[in-house]
Image (cartoon, rainbow, N blue to C red):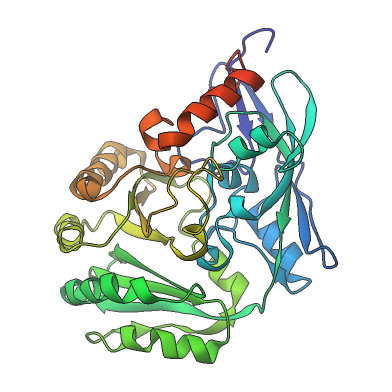
Length: 377
């Protein structure tokens, strides 16, 4: 701070926009602080700032407990949590920040602080959705929930020519789903394959009840594959690890959708590009029942976040793939409002995206980091 060095903080090193590294500055690397523990009596987990999501899942599952975590297990808990935290269990338990009980944070003045609803509540409010602008979080404490790790989960696949019917049905059907049922669409083209629509599902409860709830979706069109079956939760949490392996070249954009519409469905299908994956993170349920200003996360009223992702190996493809992702995003952007700062390369945290929370965020930032030391976010 005294030397005005550019400063990056690396938790899991998974930051899509590259916030965890910098040139001409200093990186605080938390990767040696990776311990995660769970207490079955208090139903709480304590996780160090450099730990990965898999460590959180494993520590909790050992005691028949869980909390909301993301779908790529080598993501760091730090950046993931501070931005909000979407996961397959968020309709039941809320976002990861809704399960954050306290945190230990080193602020720009060099002080180590423990923040919670009772201790420095303004700073605790800000780090739940405001990103890494306020300090280095060295430990997170999460609320855990009783959980059976054998869940009904998997994907149902349709050829692209049936996608319109399936997505139109999904737009109406998904509005009435229980909090236990998480179902979200992905448009993609497998390697050496034809374009498909995949509905990824996870039911957090009795698999028999889940089978009944998902049955109407299975009746739409003629799926070419149905992989929804009872499986270990960790299998669902690690299935994307290979696609987003360390060292992969990638680019992502996203947009928040408050309601499905015919226009959105048409735009998604017209913009579908075999080089790009158009995926989703579903919200609603418990996510929506948290007050808009109870945390700094600004998008409580969305039904789904659409994520446009390109992944490739050859650096020569950089320009082409980035342009392709931007084109898909441009097509669906009119149907979205706001974005998720954790996984968007091009946009910074702006007043428009944070709405009525922005003024309070700016005030707290000025109080705890008046020199803007934590400025990569």
